Length: 327
Image (cartoon, rainbow, N blue to C red; front, side, top):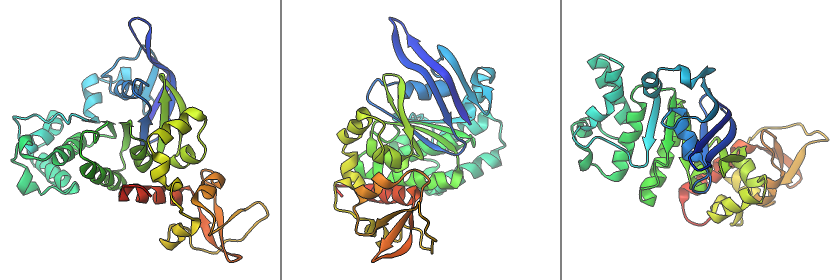
């Protein structure tokens, strides 16, 4: 879907924001860019819709160079959600949402149906919210409108630049949960920038950790936690208490996943090369054994009772994050 090929961004005075970046973002993937301030994650995001010009290299969308697209059509087909939300204060909610569909010359009936559909999808009653102004909404409600406005023109790609960071913890957590549910329905390609490690682990199909304009590790949440590529990745996530809230701090065991049925409950024929873990083993031991796409056999009192894979682990981590606080 989106391919970065040796992409760099230079600013005056030899300031390198992004250096020789190579990435492949898959169709329908929730892809998270994370790293310390100044690492190049927002610049990387903005180069996709040409808000920032590339100094060197090429970005492709569907195997076509972004420079070959009409810039207005490119941006109409890429939704964009900002931290500042950016709703037009003098417009009603329905007028804000209708901007891109009207630029695309959709007929009025189709636009109205789309507004209704989108407001309902994020739990805002259409009849109650259509005619309101942004100032009449809470921060969380405004951000929901910002999300659906980005979806209004039915784009294939959504760019989200720290969209929840200005919200209070409760609103932020609710929106994180809502965006995960929404993504399962709409199946868009989402590129999401955050500085919050817990948010990255809860949302991302893959996480791209950046430092000084370069990719340090691009991997699944499970592998980022269980197999950090180097000390920087490990220390970066530890600094944000990701390990604390991602069950490494607690006394969770493999059987905790089984108790809430987060395992594959079926008979499995053992082989000599199978990795087996007892249900009394720690969650930390499970992470050390687990490799992406690999099944771990779970043993209870000498009997194999099922398997656990990376999907089970990621779901368990997300559930603990949703609870909030120390786990």
